[in-house]
Figure (cartoon, rainbow, N blue to C red):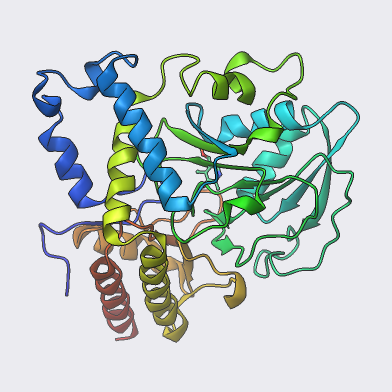
Length: 364
Ligand SMILES: *Cc1c(COP(=O)(O)O)cnc(C)c1O
């Protein structure tokens, strides 16, 4: 199937496409929420109506991820990047050392920010060889570390852990911005999980944090109130006005995921979509992906062209046919297709057909 003029497939890495059914549902109640005559975004965040949306969002997320009762769920602002600061401010005690695994672009952002507040030990890094990742590598975790931080999926580099790192008693902290809700997860392995919403949850402006309650209460004196997990948890995400419309939309996405069959079903769909795309790229003489097959991302598929001179023509033809946002990150070049939960299988199949067609036209 080739995308017609009306069919558009949006492969943006973030803010990313949302499920079509969710967008229509939001549209239906955009101006007049449940007959109240106002939009959810025009309503007090302390109103019973919004409080019920917030409670549902938490409940649905807890159900999707089987989040145990000793974990708090926070709906915050500031993006994943604000958490780069909040994590060391809350969890690195004076004189302690924080451990980081460096798998690429976003890990390095987290490390750079942490260094402003704490001593950092990079316990493993693939800086010299992006193709391999360190995800499968052996590393030892000093049990005196304040915490161990890793990035489950490197959105830009297309590298993903296929397992949860072992770290003993050290609290494990994970940036799951671009893979949360793409597969089932054992939350009990983590001290804290965080994700900016705009990849796989909802619109930009919302950040989800899931934190084990024994980690609350250790923030350093200078921690801004709005980055202090204890304050945020005690106020149930309402230490100030929460991103109410983002929470509402996230709740629609959570419900959509539950209706799809939950995260086991999403995992099956995501594996299938990723396999279709990687297979096509690997079979191609023109396109290639250099990431080691064991650590390839299921969500973000970067790929390159043997003949760089064809890149602009490729992007132009793709856009004409409705394949949007296939350009790679500005720091890496090349191409990238992000295939989060909301990307339908037919979008991946159509893209694969276009890749083949483009390659054939190129060879001739
Ligand atoms: C997008 C992204 C970020 C940055 O998110 P912001 O919400 O823009 O701060 C951090 N980490 C990962 C893995 C990402 O994909």
